[in-house]
Structure formats: structure tokens, C-alpha cells
Amino acid sequence: MKHLIPEFEKLKSRFPAGFESSLVLPCVRRIQEDRGYVADEDIAGLVEYLGVPRIQIEEVLSYYTQFRRKPIGRFHLQACRNVTCSMRSAERLIDHLAKKLGVAPGQTTADGVFTLSTAECLGSCGTAPVVMVNDTYHENMSVEKLDRLLDELKGQG
Amino acid sequence: MPGKQLLMTFPVTATSHTLADYVGRGGYATLRRVLDAMKSEDVTKEVAASGLLGHGGAAFSAGRKWGVVNLNDHQPHYLCANADEGEPGTFKDRWILENAPHLLLESMLIAAFALQVRNAFVYIRGEFDLPYRRIAAAVEEAYAAGYFGENILGSEFSCDIVIYRGAGSYVCGEASGLLSSLEGKRGYPRNRPPRLTVQGLYKRPTVVNNVETLANVTGIIAGGAEAYRKVGTAKCPGTQLVSISGHIARPGVYEVEYGYSMQQFLFDDCGGMLPGQKLKCIVPGGISTKVLTAAEVAPLTFDHQSFAGAGSSIGSGGMIAIAEGTCMVRLLQVMLRFYHHESCGQCTPCREGMGWLHKIIDRIVAGEGRPDDIDSLYRISRLQDGMTICGMGDAAGYATIGILDKYRDEFEYWITNKRSKLEGNLEGTVHA
Image (cartoon, rainbow over the protein chains, first blue to last red):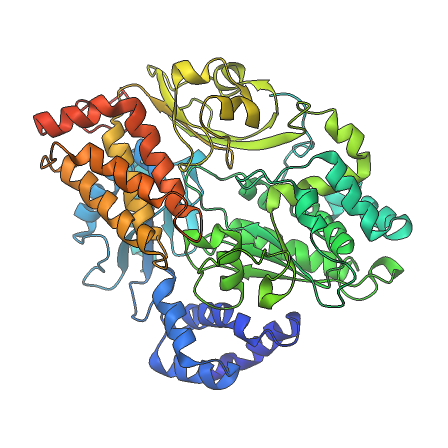
């Protein structure tokens, strides 16, 4: 994480003085973008850089669903299964994805290309069902659109 | 259009979210006028006189919230826009962030001036991608044009803003949980008192307003409180963005004037139900509000009083239209799984209660329901009411009781016959 410190410094300059603790979430997010997950050495580095207790970083990492301590697949598929998405075929979509990828939600394919997750409401109910691929929303999904998307991603993978 | 429009007043184009377009529509002129000619107190007075209500779900008076902040206490004050839109069924703040980010920023500057805030924040949920990119780009544009920073537009007023991204936690949408998160910690809600306007972010007076609430401020100051009060009803002035989804023909975000006919909204503006579907019930304002049957919703008008009279609430405006043929047992199972997943774990009645509710509904769906399970669902739901730091325990209870009261027969059927009365179907009467 040391190479990210110049970026963190820039970030810090936007906050009022004394807000070091607030930098935990944005720093963790940036580290995860960079490495794909948060490693032990990142935690140690952040403790030193921000001067916050290690337990605070551990608590944050174990609390927020978007943060992870282990690597995942190159493409993280997150299918919403909350109320509206379920009413617009999300359950069938998730079954299809699981069958096609040969993994259950929470698992990564053997080649390390796809990780399948289920998500709770992503705020995309008007264009349900929604599947996120990494940071991008894919809305109004159907089995056909999903198949095309998987083929495209495999091409990139 | 469902009545008068205050926010959706321009056509959405490829550039309508940019600073150039916003200024072309008269943007930032109100801020200029405020800085030139108004006192902080006068801005708050105007907002209070307008009757503007919180649009995040609780409908608390924005002017009263602002009024708590003591302008002469010689300590920093903070302002935070709550863009942690996560109540299932709700996606209306996304419309503002994506299409009118400068309206939010101008409104926040006016609010910051009124509350003597030097540092403002937008707390946006971590999954939002385009909304984040839009608001972040708008902030850069606004800084470059001199709307943020030191001595804004040559005045004495200075203000900085940070866009702060959450990381996946429903409870962070609750204002005190949001501030815990903004302090770089777990999003644990806090006990009141003290109110956040007395001790909020880092124990300093902090106003947390929903994105849509803030977005209305520019218009109120531009046109005056009196003009704002002419929109909507006497008790419920203004409009509310409604995000409608489910088995409806034209889902999306609509700006609805308070007092507008629900029948007209659902069946004219939204085009009625999907082909071949009939309305069974609606979730009126996010899943934490009690469902209303088609017959109950038919005579209502869209305002707080009308929905309260029917025993529910318009909440966050996250409306879900549910078609006949939908299994309410399975629908409640989806809701309870969500609440269980999102309980932050601080308060025993919520942490344990959500688990119990979830376990019981799973048991019923597995065909292993017991005769007293319905009573247990009621008992646990009531046990949580008012017993937790934040409102999430209450909300899950309301959702559960709302569905049990109206669709008890579906639960009894499943427990007795070990199968759904409606084949466990969530997709209405049409099978793909």
C-alpha cells in the first residue's frame, strides 16, 4: 500500500484537520482496487500511516460487505435478489448463472475468472433484474442477455 | 405528469447533468443571490416556512431540524447529504445524483451558508457507480468554477465538500449509523439524545438531510416559501419523487405532487400493471412500510395524511406494485432474509429477532411450519418495536405484521398443506 500514500495525501487534503479516522474507508477501498483484496501488510501499513488502532480497521473490514480479505475472480458477478429483482425473475437468473458457471453463490470458478455472489437491493429496481459485473450495473437482465455478457467477459478473461 | 413538477423540470439529455447546462438553466443564480443579500437565519426561516419535509422516509420538518443548530456556539458545524439509498424499492436519489448533481450541490451550499458549515459531505452508497461518477465530476466542475473553496463568489463564505463512499451496509442509511461510518468505523447507529444536530459527526452539531430534501432547497429559496406551499396540499406541501417498480408497466422515477390521485398515478401515469397482471397490493414506500391491498390504495391520494389514514406510510417513495398470483409468504421470506443480513448486531432484539423471524419463515417455506409459527412471527415483530437504537427492528416488524394481517390465509395454507397456495411464485400470474 506504500505506493498509494501520495494518493492518500491528496485525499487527506480535502478533509478537515483531525479527520484521519475518516480516511479508513476510502483508503481500504483504494487498496482493494489496487490489490484485489486487503492483505495483512496493508492493515499494518494503514495503522502506521493513519495512526488509528488496528482493531478499527479489522472491524471495518469484517463489517462492510464490499470489503474482502481474500482474492476473488477477475469478474465479480453480483446478482441482486431483493424484492423487486426477485419479482422480475432474479431467482431464475441466479440458478442459471450457478449452473452455467458450475459454482454456487459465494464461490469462484476453478479458472479464477468468475466469482458469483448474490446481493441485496442495489437501488436498481426500476430496471430489475440487475447484475453487477465488478463496478458496472447491467440492468433489465434476462437469461439471453446474461449468456451474451458471459461470452463477452470470457473473451476478455 | 402526476401534478406539478419542482425537480424534474428539464429534459434529460446527454449533457443535462453538466455545469454548463445547469448554469444555462439558471443554476447557481440562487446561491449568488443568497450570498449577496441574505442572512443565514433568513434562509433557515424561509425553509421552515415552506414546510419542507424530510424525503428520506421519516418526513421530519427540515426547517425544525436546521433550527436546532446554534449559530453562535463557536464550534464547527457539519452538513451531510444522505445518498446511502438502500431501502429496497427506492432508487429516486439516484435520479438526482445522475441527472441533477449541481442542483444538489447548489442546495448544499445554500444549506451550508444557512447553518454556517465550513465542511460538507455527501455520503453515497458504495455500490453506486454512475451516480458517484456524476456527483464527483460535478464537484470538480464546481470547484473549478469557484462555487466551492475559499471566499465563494467573492463573499466571506467558504465551504469545502467531500464525496464519501460507503461499502455495503443498509444501516448506514440511518443518519447516526451514517455518521459512524463517515468517521471511518462500523456503521453503528447511536442512541439519542443527544440529537445529531447537537452532537453529530465527531461530536459536533451535524445536519444530515436526504438528497431529495436538500435538492428542494434551491427552488424554495428561489421562488419563496409561499410559492412552495401552493404546490401539494395544505398539510403536505410540495412533491415527492416516487420510484416505482415491480409488476408495473412503466417502472421508473416520477415526481408526484402531494395530493395526487393514486389511482391515476398507478393506472395512467405508470401505465397500469404488466400485460395480463392484476394489482394485488403495493408496498408504498420501501419494504419497511406496511403493504396496502388494491382496494385500500384505490381511494388514496399521495400524501402523508392519506397514507397514514390507511395505516401505512409513503416513506421513502419506494413503491412496489405486486400482482395477483404473487406468493406473499415467499415475498416476506425475501424481506426477512434481507433484514437478517443487514442487522448491525448492536441490539439484542434486532440481532436475535431478525434471526428468529428468518428461521421461522424458512421453516414454513420448507414445509416444516408449526401451528404456532404465525403467532411467533407476530410476537417477535412486536417485541422489537421501540426496543432498539435505530428504527430497523421496528421496520422489519411493521413489514412482517403488514403482510401477516392481510395475507394470513397464505401462511396458514402453507403450514397446513406444506406447500404454497400460489406455487411459491414471485413473478405474478405470467410464467415465462
